[in-house]
Length: 247
Length: 354
Image (cartoon, rainbow over all chains, first blue to last red; front, side):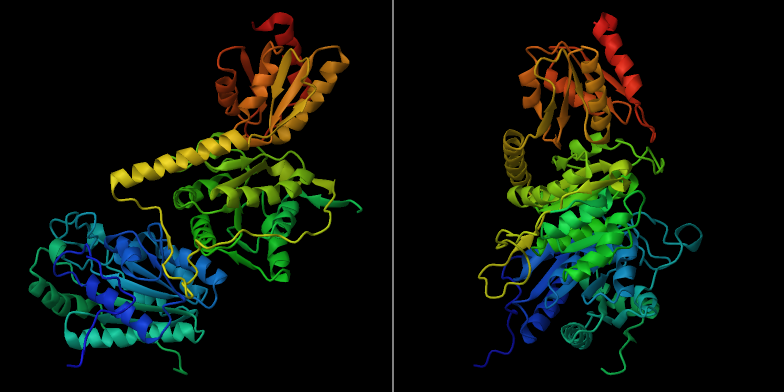
C-alpha cells in the first residue's frame, strides 16, 4: 500500500512537551516539511525562543540555537552574517516577538536581514501561566486581566504583520492559521514560500501563524480552534501583507 | 619595523583584525567610538562584516549567533552598554562560546559621564550577569599592550570556550602612543566541529544552548564550568612586577592607574623608600601568585584605583589578613594625582596606619 503521510525527516521522533490541543506541533511539522521538500536540511539553522517553544531546538533534526527572550532575530542575524548560504529561521511566540523582542524584530526587518521568522501568535503568555500578551484580544480574560483586557489600563493588541509590512526591508509578510485542514495547507504553502524566497536571496520574510492554546484559554481543543476562527481572525485577518512584485 | 602613532581604540580594531576577527557587532557609545569607526572601514577591507546593531542587547546576541556559527567575533561598549549586554554575556558563558568584549570604562553609576574611570571592575571580574560564571579579563596599560593582547584574548577565548573581556578606560582608548605593529601573521583558528553552521553531511546536529531544565543536569554543567574556571585560575594568572624585589610597600594598580602608580614608585625609590608595584595584567583570574612572592618582605599594600575601591577587595582576599591593605583612588572620571599618592605612601610608611 502506498504511504501517503509520514513524519518529516527533519522532525525528530521524540515526545513533544506541548499540551493536548496545542497547535505548535502542527506548525513544527509544516516547517520541517518545508525544509525537507526544499532539500535544505544540511544548511538549515533554527533559533528557538523563550516561551512554550523553548525546546524547539530538540525537536528539529538540524543545527539549532536556543536564544534569549526576544533576541532570536539578533541571534539569527549573527548566524546569517557568518553563514550567508544558511537557511536561517527563528521560531518565536507573541510575548517573545511582539513585547520583549520588538526592537530586534523591527530592526531585523528594517535591515532586510535574509532570515525567515515563524511567528506563532496564540494571544497569551502560555508557558508562564496565561498572562496577558501584547496580542491578547480586547475583552479576553487572562490571569493578569481577570476581568478581560480593556483599553484604559491595558491598551490595544498589536498587529505585527501589518506593522512590519510597512518596512522597506521586509520582502514577504503573511498571516496564516492552522485551525482547520484547509488553512493548514495554506499555512504550509506560505511557510514554504518564505523559505524559498530566503533561498533565492530575498530580504526579511515572516509568516505569522495564529495558534490555539486550550490550556490557558480555558477551552477544549475543539472550542479553541473555533475561537481562532470566530474571535482571532476578525482582529488578525489572514493574507499576504507584503509580496514582492517579481514573485 | 618603524613605529606608528595609534589611538588605543584604533589599536583594538587593528589588533582584532590581525588576530583573525572578521565580525563586529556594536552600538554607538562614548568613549569607544574610534573603534567602530576604525572597524567600519577595516573589516570590509578584510572581507569581514561590520554591523551597527539597534542596541547593545542586540549586539551581544548577534555575537552569540556569530560565535555559535564558528566566527571569531567581538563587540565593544562602555559602562551602560556593557550593563545591557550582561544577559547575553551570561548566555555566552553558559553556552561556552568564544568571543571578545571590550569595555572602555567611564564614570558611573547610571549615565555617569564619559570621562575615564575604572568603575566597572567588580562587574567585570565577578561574572557581571546572572548565574554562576566568570569572564577572562585583560587590563592593558598601553596602546602597545592593546595590540599585543587582542591576539591573546581571542586565543584564550578559543582555548577555554569562554568570553574574554578587554577592560580599559577612556584614556587608553583615546590616547595616541607609538606602537610596533609587526608583520601580519597568518592566523590559525582552531577547528570548529562544534559550531552550528549547517550540518553539511555531519551525522549529528549541533546545538548552541544554555538551558538545562533538569536540576541534576544544570548541577553537572555548573561543576564543569567551575572546573574550567579553576584551570584558568591555575594557568593564566598574569601580572607585571615593578621594583618589588625588596619592597616594604607594594602598590597594586591596573591599567591607567598603574601608570600613575609606576611614577610614584620611581619617585619613592629616588627618595630611598622601598616601594614596588604589582600590576595585574589579567584582573580575572586575579594574580594571587604575585602576592605570595612579595609577602615575605612586604609590610603593607596600597591599592590605587580610579574608583572608590573595587580591586582592593581582591587584594585583601589575596593577602588574606597577613598584612594591612590600604586604598587610595579617585572616582567619577577624575584621576589620582601621583604626588597625592606619593604623600599617602610616605604617610603610611612613616607609621601613619599600622
